[in-house]
Length: 592
Image (cartoon, rainbow, N blue to C red; front, top):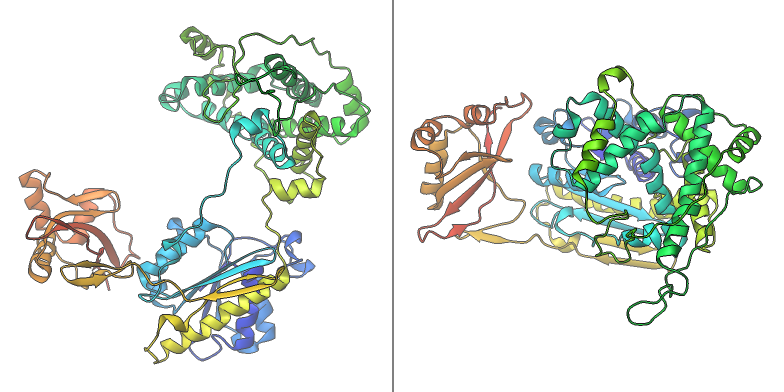
């Protein structure tokens, strides 16, 4: 089962075709990828051609390798489904029973962990790999022999402190991330909030009942502004909105920051406040002769128009003239405005330290009646980096570089901004081919061991770590799974207590008593508690007489899906000394 047919997926499928994988009478390759081919894929996903743009990746990749090896004709089954809990009706017990191994060609950790959990559950080998520029890694996961992919995790990536993003950037990465957040704060979240307000009865109480007061005021203010105060009727109104926001962000906010912390201000220790890495900013006045300034207005106005379904414009001269004509009131910095200086500060950037209940009441009263907006919905500009006509990257580039200009940071071009804002991982074909080759070597071992050689040792397999830029090639044995014992039996994450018939709850209790000398004290399925000492006696006795296939629907109020053959239960047990004992999950076969 090949999960993903992007850069690694294409290379892997090509290798399999050359190796003759699945070309025998009973061979089958399953591929899934929900994406369609985009032009930007062509430089690294080599089974695709310009004429394939817009087609499904899985179908196109399969057709390409059949041309390479005609013996694969009819041997490849393509799917277009994301792997996840929502598709377990497709990739169900029967599906996993019919495959020998899984190879991931994924681009996100969550999907990798999910597939890893399914492989552990169904006891299937998993071949995992990834690349990052010249770096690559491979991992082989073999049931009962190695730990799972999820058993070891990389440390989380360091995030940029919020105070640095909001007030004290010192690198272009900071301003790009800030601009990315600004994009969401202008063109995505407000539209989603407005739509929720218009479609949810009694939105303030039902959806925001437990929300922090400051957040509630901010959200309701945005809803009011986008529905009433700043609602545009024409594209000209969008230009005015963009021009006012330019002033607020790049002039007024900087003046306020310098009012709070003048360039010669010092800290309590006597050190200059604006000491490195902090950079003292400079306010920017709108200059219609600056292409960068006009870039911001053009992109912001068009995106604001998109939110409301208004027709935009590419006429830079008209937009420049209209922005220049907007009357901007003179800004006067205010005393008492709190600005967050350190990450641990909780001070809100507002004129007071708390919320006035009357302010919230007045704000709620100022919101329009949703009934008067029947059928009205805003359109969120969900971020899409690969469409060069949608103004998304244009806005982020202009917003980031203006922010960089405020703080004396070297600007970034559109390409670098797109790479950082879109979190584009550079792909090098050489790394992809090497990593795929290493995985195919491990696949030979897994196939060989499945054909009769059961004397597998952990040192037969190798995990790989490479960096072509150094160059560095490192290989290590996989790590054994963590072991624990229950009642003298050794077990790991791969183990489960398998019961191949639909038993009653009482029979399950008796099984643990007789077979393992353990008292079953609690049984659950997911978040649903099926049995515990806390149940009242009548309910407990009634449940004990029910088969598991009857008990689950009775308690959860949901039928067991017809594709489910095995039900997984988590159990708590204690021994004769009343000590808790860790035991593997229990799996009960309810259908053949």
